Image 1: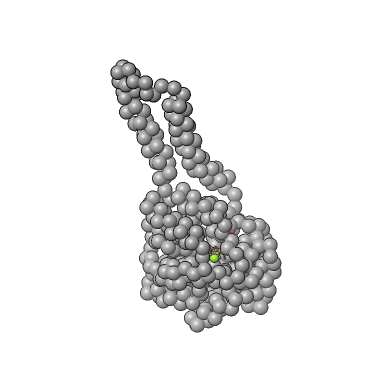
Image 2: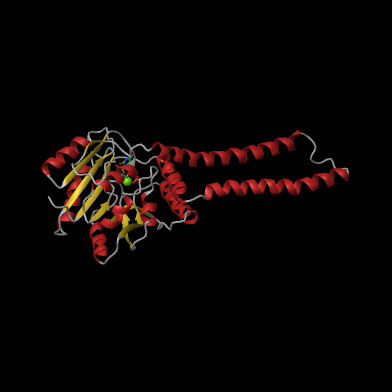
Length: 315
Ligand code: UDP
Ligand code: MG
C-alpha cells in the first residue's frame, strides 16, 4: 500500500462522545481534497472505552489507524506517537474534541500548496472557555514569547499542518519534556498562520486541568530558555548588592548613636530573605536537573499496546 497524501493526527483521552463526530467531520472534509488520507487516532490510556470504539472505527474504515498506548502518557507524547506513525506528505495535528474545526484543514492545505512547510492555526476567537483559562493562556503565550529564544507565534496551539520534511526533523528530536509548538517553531522552514475561531468543546470536560497546564508551561520554559537560571543569578546579585549598601549605613548609623537596626527582627528578616532566595534558586536548578536525569534514563517516550505495522520509529 502506498503512503497517503495526508495524515490527520488526533490524540484521544476519554473522548468517547466526540469520536464518531470527529471521524465523520474529518472524513467529510478530507474527501473534498480528492487525495488519499489516513486518520491516526492515538488512544492515550482512555478508561471510558474509547479504545474499543477506535478499533470499531478502524474495522469499518481502513483509513483509520489506531495507536493504543499502554497507559496515559499525556497529550504531547500522544501527538509525538502520531507523528512517528504518520506516513502522509503533509501531517495535520488536531484535537479530538472538535475545538479545532476540521474545515480549517482545507485552508491549511491551500497554504501548503503555496509552498509553506508549517501552517499553524491562530486562535482569533475562543468560545465557551472560562475567563481563567483565557487569561492564563494569554499570559502564558506572552511570557513564553518574551523569555524564550524561539519566537513561538502568539495564540497558537498544536492545531497545525506540517510538511513531511518538518515531521522527519521533529521525529529526530526525542526530548522527553516536549512542547511541540516550540519545537515546530524552532526547526525553521517556511512558516505561516491561518486564523480561525476556536469552538467550544463538543462533549465532555477538558482533559487539561490546571496542574497539567502548569507542567506544559514549565516544559515550555525549561525546554527553550535558561531565563529562570539567570533569574537566580540576578536575585543573588540583588541580595549581595543590598548588603553592600546596608553595611556602611548601619556602621555610620551606629557610630552616630542611632538605635535603628538593633534586635532580632532585623536578623530574622535578613535570614528569611536569603533563605528564600536560596531555596527558590535550588528549586529552579532542580527543575533542570530533574529533566537532565529523565533524559539520562533514556526510557522510551511511550509504550504501545497496539499499533500499525510500519512505524517510522520504534519508540
Ligand atoms: N489529551 C490526551 N492526553 C491527555 C490529555 C488530553 O491525549 O492526557 C487529548 C484530548 O483527548 C484532546 C486533546 O488532547 O483531544 C486536547 O485536550 P483538551 O481538549 O482537554 O484540552 P483543552 O482544549 O481544554 O486545552
Ligand atoms: Mg479541548
